Image 1 (tube, rainbow, N blue to C red):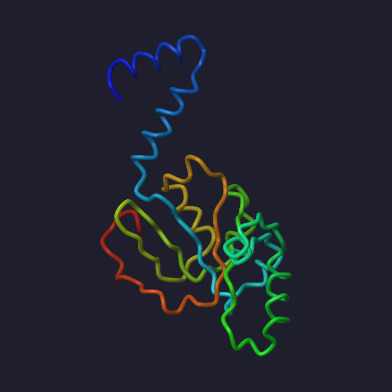
Image 2 (image 1 turned 60 degrees about the vertical axis):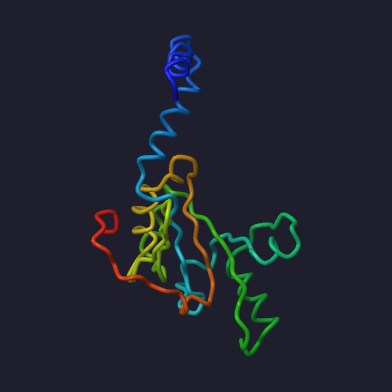
Length: 173
């Protein structure tokens, strides 16, 4: 941002229009965060019963049809897939759910792992991890300046994911 832009933002703030000043502050805060996003991943085969009433979106409906999907409880999603494949010989689809960042009722529920993304790479944390730990990582992300919810990804094909060795990164402690 050049000097003229900074002066314009400050003049607007003095006149009571602080929207542009807030945007500058948010952008600066986003650039200082160690991660871009944090995402919780849950293996459906190891699902804790506390997740069953969480509203989710079936991502296959979104991808296949392009139409807007409605939220439904995870329980309904799992029942639908059991009807389609009673012997569970095929892989489940994937679903995404969200939890309000201030809702601490899910904090004790276990996750399979947490995916962290920064500018040039991504990594997964080893377990045991919980929704509470996901919240800690989320508050260190650029996404936390724009979003007020944690994202959870439900899938049954999480075993083939590469887990890098934990680096000596102070942000991962």
